[in-house]
Image (cartoon, rainbow, N blue to C red; front, top):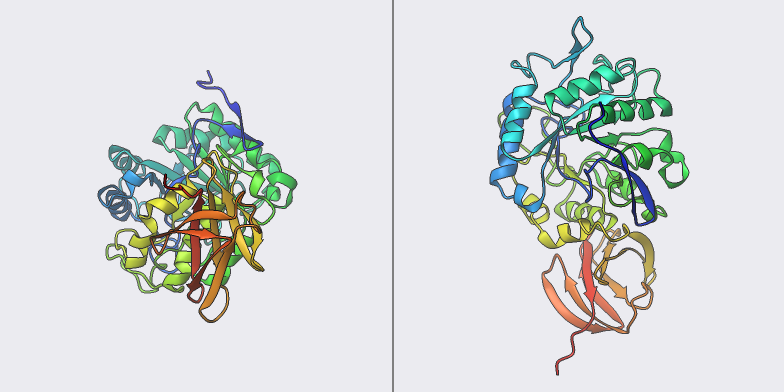
Length: 398
């Protein structure tokens, strides 16, 4: 018997498949660029346990980071009865003990599959095509909380997405479904994605370079009202701090960043205003200064997690491209990146962004500076850095 009912939830003019998860954009960690450079895609029993523990003891969990999601790194095969078996060299005791450990910390766990016949990394692990029901039940039996569904192998179809979603729902276990590419991405209002999933990728894979970061952000242009509570467009894993290194040891976390600290700060700022899920794709067992600055910034997270506000949209401010989010308390969050090759004065012009007054209180999130302004706020922004401010009404003294 089906144990729960799929509800329709109306938020920000979006109708989303709602099984209780993803009221806010999910926060957590995904594995793809953590051990080895992006694309190496390895994960190991003890590494996952250590990563979950780091999320718990570092303070990430208290801030809302609760998802530990494995990508195409657990390399399953199928047993004679058709059920998935994780690669024994990586998970010698199977997947369930790892999941149980993650749950023991109060965190949630996710796994990867493909809607087609094969997964994407190497093309030798089985996808879920032809096994939607059995795979969904396996995930439920293992107590998986999140399933990332890629678009590789043969027989990748819209109907496959719908059938796998239905199979997951019928297990009675609440699981986030993330769509990683598919026909929805070229359709109006993300097509069928909001009807069957809680998270869907807005673009292709995010790599650890600034052009990739900007490409992810541009995929949201003109689509701010297309997602909301229980159904979020996603800019893929965040590269804050840098991908892993070519010569890797899974038990010795290391970063080989391909972006500057300014560029990582820009990534964090724009993902926040866009209300994309924030899944860190780098090794959180070894926090660098820029990771600490970004990942633990409560003001940035508050902008991202304001689920009652429509995700940010692209506007112009003083002839410069800006990203604006009107927060649910009436404040405005504005992010303006400096895309030039030199430090530049950048201004937030109140009239351009539709602020209802010629005065505002400005909180500069990265500079941790407060000021009252008239007409505009101007600051010098370093190369590829971003000014991120929250505007609120001026509180006149009596």
